[in-house]
Length: 634
Ligand code: ADP
Image 1 (cartoon, rainbow, N blue to C red):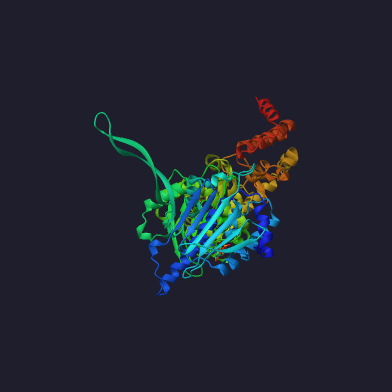
Image 2 (cartoon, rainbow, N blue to C red; image 1 turned 135 degrees about the vertical axis):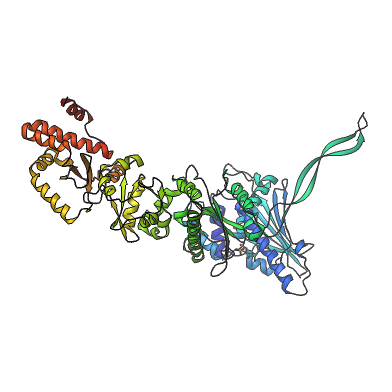
């Protein structure tokens, strides 16, 4: 009998698929089981909607059987079955959009593990089999058919015998080669694992005959008259999958403890989650989700190695282990599962990114996670602080990412160290505590809170009775530059040259004073040369002699950060301003030296600048020269 040819498209696809190297051959079982489950769904639906279909729900099942000697894996179902025409129409063509999409991706990225990401349906059997036999009898019909194919050559369909309706898909497993261990697919443990991994939540029971052993009495007795026992094995019909996933069960049936246990097992965390979010959405997209926020960040969370994503299921069948397209990037620490019947099993990775339903789910989850975090912040500060310690930086990166696209969403989840309270406060708390007349939100950046608080330039702001947020993380300054303001109040670095906090009168006085000291200030600027862009009499220093502030967009902390990066950014420099406190004895000493001994005055200028650098935590170019200058004063 002549072989029928696959449709042209199918043939090409099959060829690409079989001859490419895959790391995810194992998904074949998921695909075949999923088809079996669909076939049972169809019959079940028929039984429920038609009067003359006497099929009992409890009899519906999938069976997986192995024959290591014949090297076959068989997936059987007692679902709707197929007749000759169905076989021709369904197994002779790969015309499903998912498959076509797969083909395109395969051609564009031949080395990428695309198959692992989505299914190609029935044809995935050829990933592990060199021959596939499908024996099927359609419900309500008398004749059974056998479809057989060895891959691209085409297929045959013949009449055959089969006791009852349903389908057997018999996969003749390929021999081992240097590249692949196909033998494993005839091993009972491997197959059980694959069922648990990919098909645990298939709605219908998946049976396997498993060898079970026990000590059993032989019927004889030993010398002491006790019954003799012997290790005996027998095959036991066992259901492998757990069928109803925890997220599909009614909320009231599942305790928090159940959820925590599930989380720890599924996501291999030794800690319980901080919180679990359960979503049961119906509307433009129907889905259920169980989202966990971990307590502790995984060791690689802030590295490139960390792979974010939620598990994506379509009706209990795993589509993707770590789907990024469904998880809001700013909450990339969240783990969990999303299960939606609206997402087709064979959706491709490319399609996922543009899928409207996934985008809807992602946006919903974004809101829900945010609200949950806001709730914890409000109701259980301690708990939130624990979370923030681990994931606070991530929220801050979230604000900076995408030019602040998520700033509004995240701004009230941020915490910063308050100078006043010596604890973490929200921006709203800072804002609400602002005394009348305070127009800006002040911050001081340094490598530690202690150093931030010691910065001389905090004095003027503190004197006014204003609180200061202490920034100690690199991302902090980028964050405020992205946000610009909170609730209409601008952020202001206490180290910026002009804080503009004086009254008109004070300003006038200060301007006059500066004018009268112009000569000495010019001298300091000249001595320091390009090291500073300006030298000024300080309006913010009260007790300290000097400090370093900056003009323009780049702060000293940012300069430090850029210096730590490889590449051109190293040259990003802050425009430094040396501020001198005119009422400090050091200024008098400088003026005296200027009048009496210019060389000594020059040394003092250098020392003043060096002191300002030290206080700001900035590196000094020539430490030895500085040290010598200091010793000259002895
Ligand atoms: P998809 O499942 O995406 O439609 P497949 O290539 O997996 O694509 O399957 C093609 C078709 O073959 C199915 O839609 C179904 O009609 C039929 N089919 C496959 N397996 C079975 C089965 N076990 N019982 C009945 N029909 C099946």
